[in-house]
Length: 222
Length: 222
Image 1 (cartoon, rainbow over the protein chains, first blue to last red):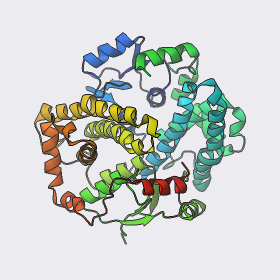
Image 2 (tube, rainbow over the protein chains, first blue to last red):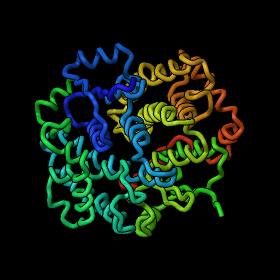
Image 3 (cartoon, one colour):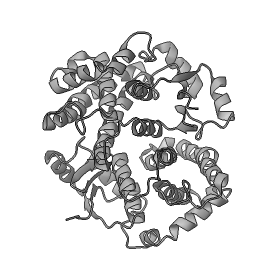
Image 4 (tube, one colour):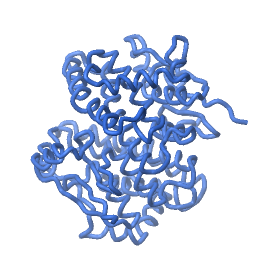
């Protein structure tokens, strides 16, 4: 009875990519209904499939789940990537939220006009180097374990490694002073389902280009 | 051994208010450490108390928890306001995130430059009337129960009722066509711990005034 989860979004990373990463890391196969036009978006809206007329939306286990965090939390809980108790979950949530803040800055970067790009990139570099990477390096150093929380894989590790890849796309040298983060990235990347997801031909999406950005503006009316 | 949770924030609603509401609704007493001067925030940062150098931060059960959602999720789970299983949690999360999106718009309104305020206000009204309130009225209508999820009180009800108070502050007539939401607001407001929280002298914070906003801008440098 259980069909594969079906992801409704456009053919871009933006807000759906963490969901793709998490499902992939959990070894869960999923389908994608790609929105290619404003008409596709409006059809979903008119169908009543989108609680707040927005995507991401994921059909999973009989639900039409909207809101990225609701989707991620459900997947994490279902596939045991959410810690063993509420205190571990609190740490996982705190870490995931910090990662989401950095990811949001990176995600939004292409939206800014050319004359603001440098300032935005500088801010991303500064926050990565002085706020976010040190915080997570410190966590790994504090317990010396292979995963951020509870000595086992959780959504926090997946989200962090995803964002480390994005930081590397901006500037690989940003990872220089963070040996434990580099080791985490390698370790997680070598987990078989993640390794598979990182290979060409997977459902992982490339960085946004001008054409896709234009498409996003039309589909999402921004 | 269990001390009261201690909330670290500015003496204003801001990002801490949903936490105050949730603790109050759960009948949990808490302390507040207000950041009154820029040095107060610096001290917390230098102490290493703030994982990402940001507030809200709540000391609870031996943790220094940062990130609003991490804090709210923990409180909800601890005090049984998070549904009975992961599917109820998914709905509660989806609803809570929609509420958070509208709350964010309302929270940012005072920070808006004067020449953009009218447009922002119009957008808030439009989203309230056409997107968010209809979505929640529809949920209540669909099952006819007294609470949004699982026929019992959850954080989603608390967050929604808090939001309805803010919508009313903007314009009471925005609630006109939503009888089930009005009934929910009355019902939740009459729960003894909520009723107490709504009375003068509680830890509930008033709408921000120009002076308080200036103070926040100095402390948080925004």
